Image (cartoon, rainbow, N blue to C red):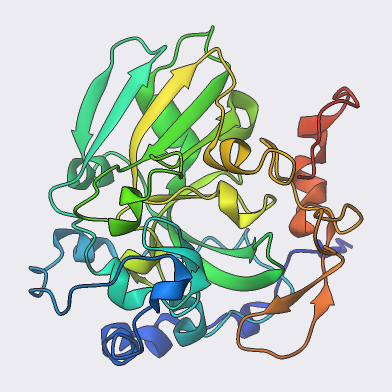
Length: 326
C-alpha cells in the first residue's frame, strides 16, 4: 500500500482559493486606489493625480493559467485585497504600505527585456513575445518579508530555468544579475540620489536553475498588477522578499557576484543570500515569527520559509564567512 507523507509546504486542494473568487480584481483595485496618498514625511514624492486608463492588456488571454498542484503550502491563500494593498516597491515608496495609486505611474507597454553578459548571443525581447516562448503555470507560494509580514499567494509565471535555457549562458557564467527599470519620470522616488538605483538583485546559477525559482507575470489568475512589480518579477520563496526584484528589464549572466541594492544600502543588515531562518535575528528585530497579511495573529516562521527540504542542499559546505540568513 502506498502511503503519502505530506511535505511541510503542502496544502489540501480544498484550501486553495478558486480563480472565480478573484475575477473582480480590477474593481477591488479601483476601490483601493481611492486611498490616501503618501505623506511628505514618508520620503516619497507625491503622486500627481489620476492617469489615463491603460489600453487592454494583450497578455490577458494567457490567464488564468493551470495551477501546478506540486506547489502548495499549509495555510490559506491570502485575500487579494490584503495582498494588493500592502506592498514593498521602493521605486514608489521607501517603506511597505498601500502604493496602489503611486504605482499606476508605471508604464508596462512597451516593455523590453535584455539578455546580456556571458551568453552565446545577447538579445532583446519584448515582454509579450517572451510570453509566447515560455509555458505559464500557477504556483501557490509562501512570501516572507524581512519586515516580518507574510502572505500566501498564487503566482502565475514560469520557471526561471526556462529563461536561462532561452538565454543560452556560457559555462563560465556563475551568477544571474537582475536589474529593474531606471526612469525618474515614471518612478519619482528614483530622483532621490542617495538610493543606489536601479534596483539590482542576483542569484547563483544553481539557485536560478532550481525548480522553485520562478518568474511571476501574474497573480490571482490575472496579469501582474503594477504595485506587485508588473510586468514580470522574481519569486524565490525560500528567501526574504527583498530578493524578489520587480519590473525586471535585464538579465545579465556573469562570473562576478553582483553587489545588490540592499547590500549597497545596508550591508550590515541585508546580504546577498537572504535565506529565511527564524533562528537568525535581523539586527533590529526577531525573525522567529511573522504576521500573515489580513490577520492580527503571529505564526512561527519556518527554516527556508518552509522549503528546507527542497533548497538546503544548495548551501551545503558553504564557508562560515557566508552569511546565508541575512
